[in-house]
Every structure is written in structure tokens, then in C-alpha cells.
Length: 304
Image (cartoon, rainbow, N blue to C red; front, side, top):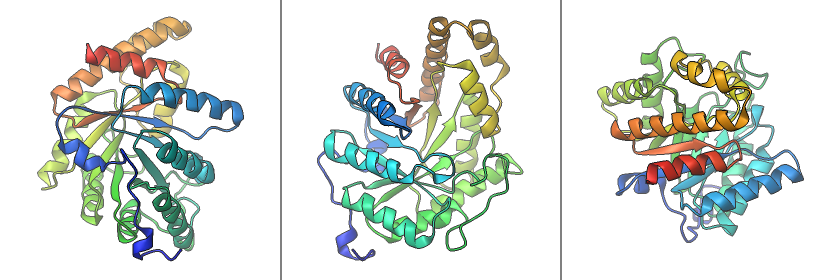
């Protein structure tokens, strides 16, 4: 199938809506993120979580790439299944890591064939792991804005990008982060999803910096209901965004009690969600870690 022709246009399946259109509508957008399972048992657990979360009718769901783009094929397959076998609207992840432009075009073509019309375009983490220098594929792309432009050139996709309220690990300043987000918008991005947020002020600060540069880009804050203190602390360190001390003080005393930790994690996520919505966030994006219980508890708290 030759890309760039009408045959590559994503076919819209029932319920497969444009994320920007939904964000502009009434009500709060709720969305959930999963990661590709490593084995059959993990895939069964993932689909249990997907089916449970499907019942609350989220705006969209997304499936990540693994570190270094290592799970690309599984990511594409799971995203295709969501589009074709559920009532959910999938947002496809795509990164520049380890891929030539030709390979990126092929993946975009697969998404188009499955009826996926929303894509999250990311540069991705360095292929040699966090902290290593970024290396582009010799026939690939070096920045997310170039990937945004590529996706937009190949069909009627709506494209989202990543946002970093607490500063990207490679960024020299918060102003630089805002300027990068503006460049992504200029390349055709229509919305952004942030790294997980534990400080409302950092989200507001980034949003206002982008708005001050004349861009009306919806930025959806990411949230992670904590169920493992060790896991979330490690993820925060890898992202270069240490947990706020106020959050650590609440989680640390219950770190070795899974039931109590989840209760406190849900409590924190609920409080953050309410504060973010009060600040005008267009929706909430939950990093589920392929589990449904804590996310559903937060959702229930917000609905009550």
C-alpha cells in the first residue's frame, strides 16, 4: 500500500473519534494508558483491565512503546485489537527510536488500516537507556516535531505530543520546554498529554507559558494512582522529576503495606484530579500500569 494516497486515510470505525473534538465538547475527558504485555499471562491481565475500564466509557485509551521502541510490533497489534474488538477509541503511540522514516511510514500505514486516527508522536527515550545521549536512527528523525509533520502528511490523523511540566531531563529550562511544545504545535500537534503530575502548580506553569506564546494547545495532565512506592519513585527518578516532599511524607509510612498504600495513592490521585480540573484541565489521563482497580476507584471518587 503506497502511503500518501487516499487509500491510507484512516477508516473511522464506530466510536473512533478525534480526541481534539472530544476535548472541545462538554464534560470531562477521562483516558487510560497501558503498556504492551511481555507474555501471554501479561496479555490476559491487560485485557481484563481493558474490559473493566471499558465499562466507564473513557474518551480514549493508549498503548505505549517499550523502552527503546522494543515492543513496537506488540504495541501495534494491541492497538489494532482495541480499535477492532472494543468500543474504545485508541490513541496510537509512535516514537522515533530505532526506526527509519520508511519503517515509521509502515507503522503509520498499519494504524491507518486498523482505523486508528489519533496518534501520540514522541521522540522517545535514548535507545541506550535513560541518561544516555540521544541517538537518532541514521535514516530516521531526530525530534518529535518532525514526527508530527510526518504523521500529518500521511493521512487524516489527529496528532498529540508529550508535555513535561517538571522539565524534560535534557532541557536547560522550563521556558525551553514551553518553546519545544510550541514547535510541536506549529508542526501540527493538536493536543498534548503530560508526564505524570504530582504538583498542580507545575502543570499550570507549563500551560500558562505555552498560552503566553500564543498557542491554545489543550494539555491533558497525566496521573498515576500509586500502588507501589518503589515503582513510582523509580519512575520519577528516570523521568528526572523527583516526587514532591509532601507526597513522599504521605506515601513513605505505608510503603510496605500494599492495601494502605493503594488507599493513600488513590486519595492523592483524587485530590490532584479535583485540583487540576478546578484549574481548567481539559481532561485527566491515567497511567494504569495495566491494572484497573485503583484507577476505577479514583474515577468513582470523582463521579460521586
